[in-house]
Length: 279
Image (cartoon, rainbow, N blue to C red):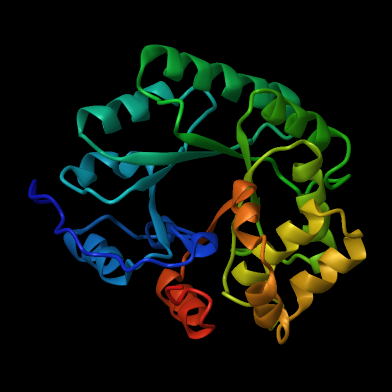
């Protein structure tokens, strides 16, 4: 990859609820690589609603000179935080978020504690700034769902003031009622979260980005889980509801971003709703 910085692309303003909302996970798909063409494609889709470019930690050496904000996904064990983040710092990369999945299904809480310890160590070494969000993906598809071991691990994440990550797309089949439970569980712990999605608005079995933000607002306001699930399932009226919700921007305190392997499609569909039009 060339050492030349990526060209700056002006981004038009969008309403605060949608600013830097959609993280680009194109480079996390199988066989993807951070070629100049791939990073140029990310630059081309950037508008005010585009967020970070998600990359594997193993691809960091290929990103020298890239100036886009990055979401670094750790691919190895819980202890591998300081190494990749130190490399990113040496390369001058702009890391805005880190994502790590818990893999020790027999001891999720212990796995979470190891992640917390590694994050603390990286912060202590100065390679992970306090402003960088760390999103921990705790498996929701194990026996017991978000009870039992999931809850204990999520408690560890919340106690350390980290964030959660949920997958509502990419090899998973989830129901609106299930996702509503995730939102409740995160909000009960006062823990921010990001969510992987495949659509801007719910439909054809997919949970939409607009639905998630409005559902977050409704859940935070104390609406029943059934009402929150109904918002998540709504493929027709949700845009009008989102447009009318005065306090929607406050939901970004909790739903920090959506992550998608089809950023061009999601951003285009989000733009088509008119919600991202400058005020």
